[in-house]
Amino acid sequence: MRDYIEERAIEIANYIIQEKATIRQTAKKFGVSKSTVHKDVTERLVQINPSLAHEARKVLDTNKSERHIRGGLATREKYLHLHV
Image (tube, rainbow, N blue to C red; front, side, top):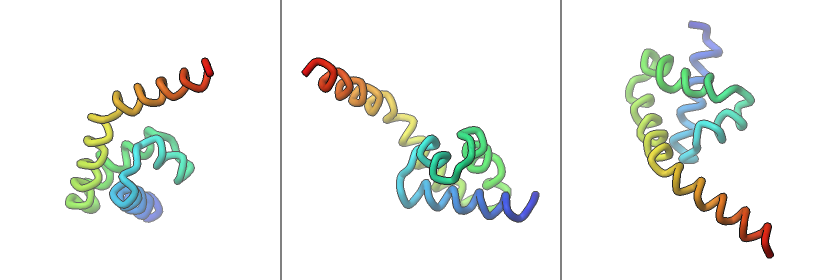
């Protein structure tokens, strides 16, 4: 694996852990696709630094379990502003 890919995977994982960021937020911050972020954290990082991968995975699993709530709140907010 190329050095810059390993460095990016580690940077991405650290960002996710520190900011409690979602895949989408992380992809936007680093200028890569959501698929790249996901692959970096779930596949590449496991080979590079398994403990860091585990920590990042915990944050992503939490975000995944809460996303339906965030979506509902965003929709509610959208319609509150639309009808006022």
